[in-house]
Length: 251
Image (cartoon, rainbow, N blue to C red; front, side, top):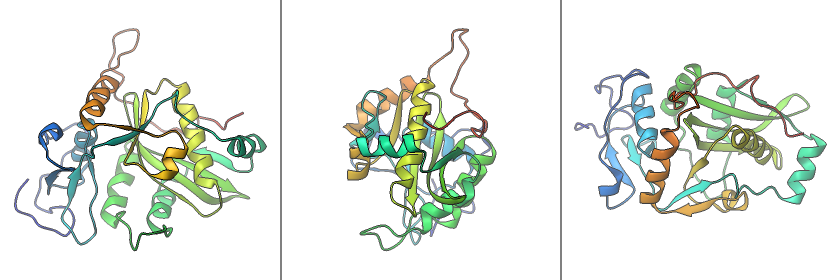
């Protein structure tokens, strides 16, 4: 990946378009989470990483670090858990849930809302620009919760084939991020999604049905989810396009 030691992406690394790919070291041969250091956040690099079970995760003062956690954390259709209290909130339509109508504000919210036990954020300006570019290209998506017309929570991630790679969520009002995430999850699973990649275990995601999976099993699961074809034999890995009119609130 070169000798760039940061901070952030390597300005000398080639820019890869969404059609170009980069082969990372095989995570199965890594002793820890870190797979590679360096490179950039161009569309081709990010898509290559997610297709290989890898994602960028680094501190602002560090170089770009590519990681593949072991164990991994995922939510399957059959494990998704909606508590009774959340079911009531969703049925009452306390929040208006929308998709892909305010991606930039969602990712800014994820990077700016304080989190317990965290003194800063890994969502740097480089990350914001990179994922906003993927959103404009139709790969990255957001789910948004509004209360009285104000954005009060949401989440974002990337859809590839039959997997959604969740990145981050935020809430400025109790249960707002849960409402956005659960509504998104229900729509995706109804659309045939195999699983949601939650990356690393948290108590919050565990309460929503998250399950630990060793990295080797995750990579096999990911490979199958990316190789899905429709009834006519066409590759369905490319799921680009806006979700603004595709998905709906839970009825």
